Image (cartoon, rainbow, N blue to C red; front, side, top):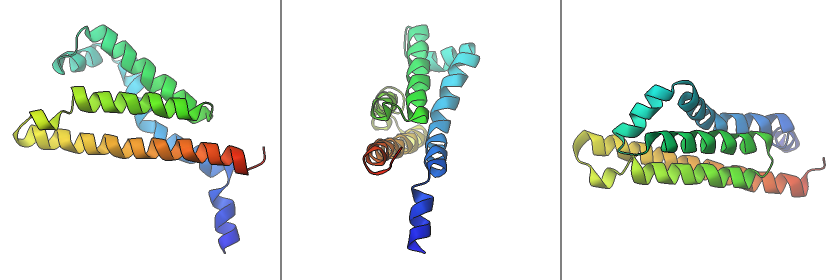
Length: 138
């Protein structure tokens, strides 16, 4: 039974699926910034980030480029680092729950915790990518 579980967990298909699942939030966020530019600019301005166009473009590039590296499993650590930087900046600049009160503070805290969990997933993906290269042939 353990051998079968090991085969499943080391399969290229499951590794690809795991990266796809992790990347969904970043790809969709990056595409939303490209497809709905006006909405993204309004969101950026509402967060007090100016120049909104520059922040929006930087976020879209970080989200899409980091996701690409994650999905292709090429320089995955760099992709994880880019996406982690995006998440950390988002917590500091947008979801700063420690500067808010009431329901908005609670919502921002939940987003911050979600972002921290995603950082954990990204770190795990970088570790697994490195281990797979060392341990699995081809």
